[in-house]
Image (cartoon, rainbow, N blue to C red):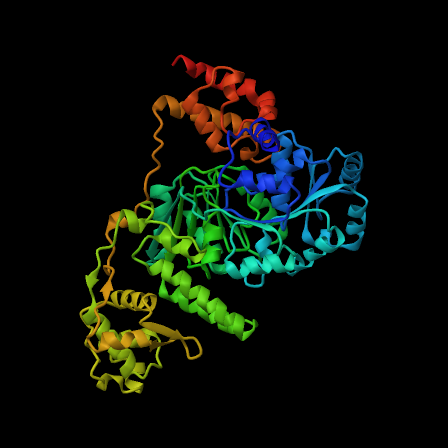
Length: 600
């Protein structure tokens, strides 16, 4: 009976026709008073798991959220759907706080979003002790773990909720958590006895594409102009300087790009984030300081101009594309210099040696995702303990690299690494292989080695490609304690002895392998006119209401309107994402926009 009512709320309030994945089971567990750990991919509908119970239970649901932008977006979306929700953070006025307190006292507020710092303050806990709390929902729960990728020490204090409110269920939600992080979430939040729900991490709508870096800015520009022109996207860079440089380059080439990093004034960051959220066709060029808490569903691409430092980071950041379920692209451009720089950052950091070892392992796993010739999605999901068949929807599946027997070249490389004493980085090894008798080679008398000049037939770029692949296949490693010197692994010995062949990817990738799969949804000229008319209506209304356009309705909703062309309010009721409140508020106007095209 409860689930039937939950299904009705899902449709009437949020405009969705059915639960996805194990949403229904999570809702049912919460309604039964159980605590839970919920892992769902970005865009998988985690928020509905506590928002629907909030509308069914007697009392207030407290939602812990790490970022102001995320809180405000969630509250705006809930209010647009007719749900009584509010947020308390540093930007909330005293008058708004008093109004929210009155609504809580009267029982009219259903959801309250707060930061972890605010929640664990003694004053706030005392206030909650005199309120009717039905559930604590802890969003972005991976922040509790030091092994997670967005560690927030204040999250570890949230265990106090179990002590102060033992009879109130708690649900922890995240999109990214390996086994160690899950164990930490259970430990710190006292969820050892909670139910665990793990959905598939697969984001089937995202096309994964990885290319080797060769003038990265130009490669990025070509990707955006040729395949993503006019779309909203995020470009991640490793440093603040790179953010500024890339942003300027994109603007000079006619794109609408904005920078975002921790070195910019907070006012500028807030303005740029608001523009990205509320305007169309904006490209945000950012460090990883930008992203968590961005609820924008119509980000059509996420580009990494440098390799992320872990699979978790990559999955979380690339997952900000296509939250609406429509086709999106994850594009990653990487090089060996990128790997070396990240390793140096880890070694120079102040973290404990044990954690340095873990971070280096995570970095190597990410490098393997870049280097693999197998299905990228398979490799990503394997990291989270999930096994699938090849996806047929990544660059390696659609354009399988035709590998060649590169054993002879690899033997020359491994032999040269050995001859120079395993004490030199890639650049020097390549100089020896190519027979460059420069000052550094002469100083070490390496022009006298038997490997001097044996690789002159290949270019520097070709040799770097081979070195990358040998690192990826575990034949070589970088000595992070000695200037990134290349060293042989045990796996290299059978290759050197001629007992094992080494298959390599082509040193130059075919052009078709760098093309993104097209969106299958092709609009006719008439459909294009309806689509643009609906987008114009949505943009103007969003500007008038001072909210992001997706708060009015997402691209997926507009797309379904174009496809089904509803003629009355009853038919609007069947459109994805249109609940009763939105139909009542916007329905007539949507029909007016569609009317001129009905007979066309």
